[in-house]
Structures are given as structure tokens and as C-alpha cells.
Image (cartoon, rainbow, N blue to C red; front, side, top):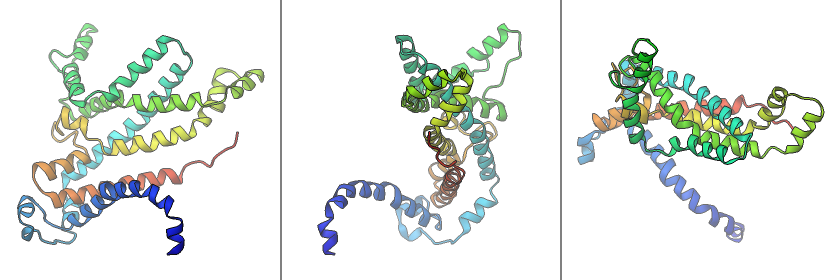
Length: 295
């Protein structure tokens, strides 16, 4: 005890961060886990005596819930297509913008970053007009090319792809900034040595640039994957899960059950399953991460 008091200063510095983490992360997770074993609803919120412990009933209901199955498949669809697309586009744009330092390149950095800080409601209004089947810009361009109109938000599969396109456009900015910072941290001497050895641009890209971006790529992959597993804003504001629940994601399913149908216990069970999926996906990425290489 005496040693702890003597070395108290490090604990005092980390105490605020630990307290915030506990209040806003750890305690809510524990509370959600407990709620998932109850039938908590609006009556339960008004009077706690109406809350009953129902064991694994919420989880067994979720296993037999077709809509929950569809939300999982839709979320996997978003993740499998959206995550690689965001990473590749972000890296490609960052590589192009890293080649120049003139004002034009700086302006385009702002242009590509702007969507990520734009309010989702404003984005939904603009993209809603773009996707409109009658007077939207996309179908107008297709009509100029004598092509058939596309039901951007009316067909379940096309609607999912339309939401992915919107989310990729909105999600490129932040990842591009991370890749740009990593690119500018690569020592110029590596490139000079490669050019002296006669390496071309592709050899430099695949043997120097991309390997040295491994930390940034790993971080971007983790954060992007977690974000897409919690895909919510785009289907919520653009389609509300439709048509025919074709765009509903797990996060939207949890929101609807909890805040539209007041099934808080059921929604908590769904959120805990999503939490486990995110933890498992993150651990798998750490497991398959390649060992560090010294350059």
C-alpha cells in the first residue's frame, strides 16, 4: 500500500481517462448485457417492478428471427464490398495527391475530405435527388446515353449497392488523410536508393511504399471494418431499411427494435451479438497481422 501511495502520480494522470472509459464504455456494456436477459420495455422503464428476468429467451428469439438473419446478411454484404472499396480508393487518392505539393493538390485534399465532415442529413438530401428515379441526375445521364433507368433505391440489391456507393464517397476523406500522413513519413532516402538501383514506379510502389504503409493500412482496416459493421446512418436516412427490408443492417435492426418498438431487452441482446461479432473480427485481424519487418 505504501508503494502504491509513493508511486501515485502515474495513477493520478491516467485516472481521468480510466474514469471516462468506465462510465461511457465499460458500464454501458455491462448494463446492456444485463438488460439482454430481461423483457425491459416502456412499462419497465416507468416501473422497474414490470421488468422480469427471462434468461436466454431474447437470444433464442433472435436466432429464429428472419429479419435479424436478413440484417446480418445485409451487414456482411456491406462489409465485404464496402471495406475493401474504401481502403483501395483512399489509398489510391492519397498516392495521387502525395505526388504534388502545389495549390491544386492542396485544394483536392480539401475536396476529398469535405464529404467526411458533411452532415449526413444534407448528404441524404443531395443523394436522394441524385438517386431519384424520375428526375435524378444519374438516371438523366443514363437517358442521354440511351440506357435504361436504374431503380437506385427501389430494388433491394441495387439499393444496397447505392448505399455502399454513398458510404464510400463519404468515408474516403478520413482514411485518405491517414494514408497521406503515413506517406509523408516515409524517408526520401528509400526512394532515392531505389531510383539509383534502377527500380521503376511500380517496383517502388509494391516494394517500398505499400510495405511501409503497413501500420496505417492495419489501423485503417480495423477502424473501417468496425465502422461498416455498425452501418447505420445511410440506410436509416436514405431507405429506413427498405425496400422489403432489403437494406436493413444490424445496427438499424437494433435501433428499430429498441426505439421504435420499445423492446429494449430484445435490442440489447441484438447489440451484444453485434458487439461479439466486432470483437471477433478485430481479434482475427490482429491474429493474421503479418510480423513487422525492419527496413
